[in-house]
Length: 234
Ligand SMILES: *Cc1c(COP(=O)(O)O)cnc(C)c1O
Image 1 (cartoon, protein in one colour):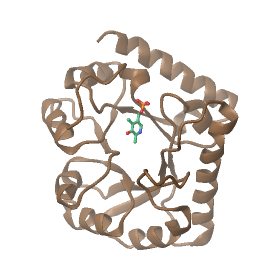
Image 2 (cartoon, protein in one colour; image 1 turned 90 degrees about the vertical axis):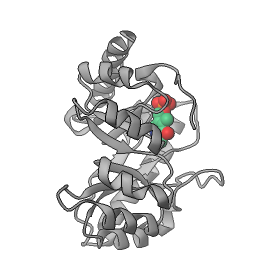
Image 3 (cartoon, rainbow, N blue to C red; image 1 turned 60 degrees about the vertical axis):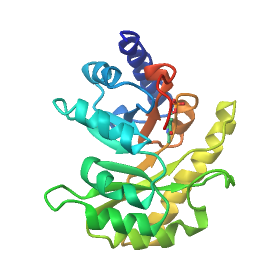
Image 4 (cartoon, protein in one colour; image 1 turned 180 degrees about the vertical axis):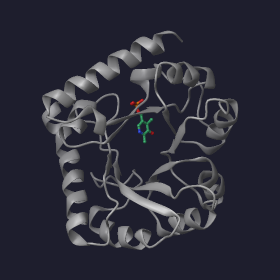
């Protein structure tokens, strides 16, 4: 468990180094601790070491941790696939949702977001490498979905999230992230209505520097912080 503190120091140092190398300000890059498959005690250690944002992929597992960590009340991000029957709990318990790829889900989240909470921050998940096995919309359908979601009153459309296929070298890792950054720019240029776009959720344990090089504003890091995932997914 106490390794977590050392891991966070290393990841933060690496984040800072990449930011410096690629002329980015560290203040504009959020380190999101991806805590799926980790026990709530591990999240508490990470919180004590300074991390305030946690990303979860599976709703039931997340709800258990949200209850267990009620006293520290971190900022919760939903980053996994979303079924219609899960939207109510997501709308009530999360601050961010990174994995929107259907208007139907976005509509439900907007309808179900409680009035006494701020609008839910959302990102469109884009299938940047067009892999048959991956969730996310194709890049050419982004503008249409973004414009529709932008009309929903209880959501705030923040940007794009991508999960590229694995690549080994920094140069090749940068390609899909550059495409995501260009796509976000094209959305901004494509419509003056899209005023709240400021987020690129991209980069994981294995390719964080490449994502930072291309403009990531949220990096989603799991194993480099917590080590191997301990619990099995449902
Ligand atoms: C698991 C996961 C991560 C973190 O992956 P690591 O390789 O453990 O850093 C990031 N994003 C998403 C969407 C994930 O499901």
